[in-house]
Length: 112
Length: 113
Image (cartoon, rainbow over all chains, first blue to last red; front, side, top):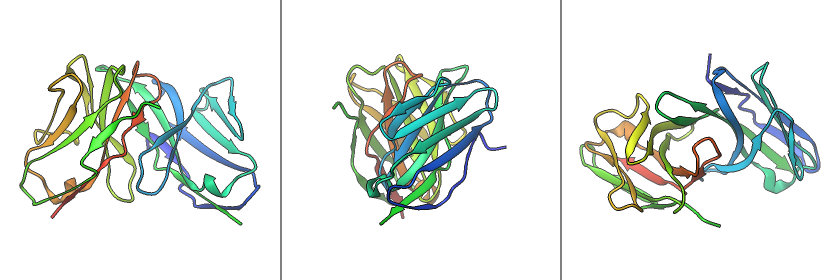
């Protein structure tokens, strides 16, 4: 089983639509959770941290279910500029330190 | 906004040559990392560095790879004898406490010919 699993997409949605991405992770030792955004051939950029209580940042809402090892991201009123690859990322504490483990990403294309 | 700086942005090298990729992490960050992304694939962990030593490394980070923080500001990744399969985007990252989200540099695209 992959450490972090995401539907690769692409998700093609019209502007203004609501779109949801899901992710599952396999390592129960995962400590912290994030959604990153990656534009083509650019570096990953932190979109938001994800908490069990759920958190919202403008049009973006993220949710973590530790029991199911499941993470979600909801984008409301999508904009053309939201087109990117969304990376589900978990931070695992290891014997030596910690490391981020990335999913393969879900590609979003917002169209007129 | 503070940023992680990487140089060069693109490096072309011949197979078997040594390359050094350079990074300047954010000044108050304590944890430093190298990741790589082969074209079309996911971002993969290479190595983490804290308190002037490697704290974790992946299977990819074999004897051909080394890291160094020579002067308290730069953080370098050296590949001793490059192979074709080392062609990838290499990202440096840093974080304050390790369990928070990292800040990534804009990457060095390494092409081995």
